[in-house]
Length: 140
Image 1 (cartoon, helix red, strand yellow):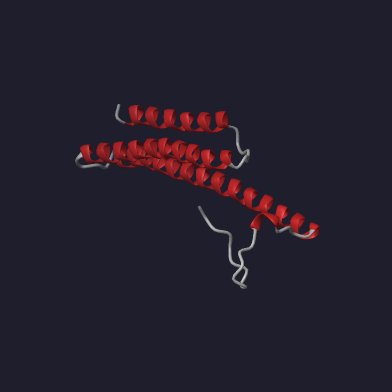
Image 2 (image 1 turned 90 degrees about the horizontal axis):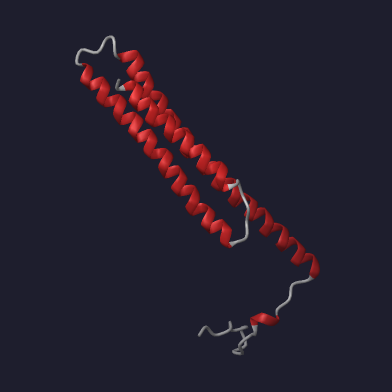
């Protein structure tokens, strides 16, 4: 069991009875609220970054297939590159959903609300579907 802190005189101070003045308490509450809002924004920005990365891989895979196919000496290299980019993009969309879900668990324990879960799942699944369709179209 943890001991209360020493107040410098050798006596232990009871932490539960320390009270902040009213104006300091209001300032601390405001700072905590701002901190929670920063956490929400950071979580949503991280999710958006994952989606941008996956979208970039998706577009790059389709662009390689479209632009390099006519000039490709061994077309197998173009197909492999396209497939790797599209599969990696699809994986990034899955990882983005997983990372966002883990972040939501941490924020939920604090009682913080953020973007609705159905929106996050819908966006991730739509992009994952686009990556899979792009893979089938590119390899056709």
